[in-house]
Image (cartoon, rainbow, N blue to C red; front, top):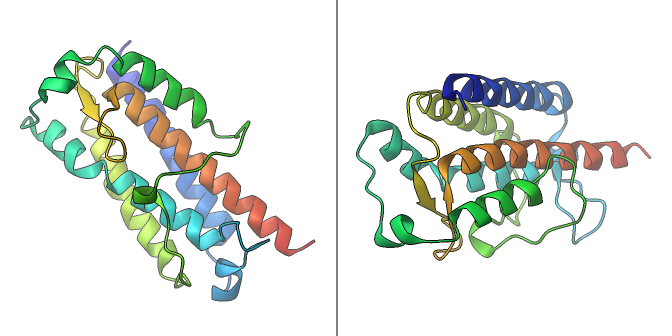
Length: 185
């Protein structure tokens, strides 16, 4: 696989996510941002907060990778499960979910009201994420293995991480759009 084409594809998918957020949520009220179809569901604001939290947990490692200072741990070098877990996460975190998934505590959004600045925080976060992805164009994506920030025994290749993080963004933006649409029913 040619990295520059793969990275360009991810950047285009990322920009599409940002455009979706802008067109769908830039003019909603704080009340709409925090409305939930039921108490166990997430609001639009919580979906965006979850994206920021989840992606940001990978940022320190992505930064070290792109700066050339990343050093694989023993487990990352020798784990026989990196390909398995990477492909499993890519399949599980599809943009249009086949099944509802529970997340681990470290990735959960805030449970309190989300302020209207979440939209701007998402844009800032997203710009940082796109910059990190862009800087991966010259890296051997299959040669870099990293550990999940939520599950210390799970490792996966950088190519899979970048793929499922972009899919994950779209997954929860689509979820937030469904929440917004439920408000008008």
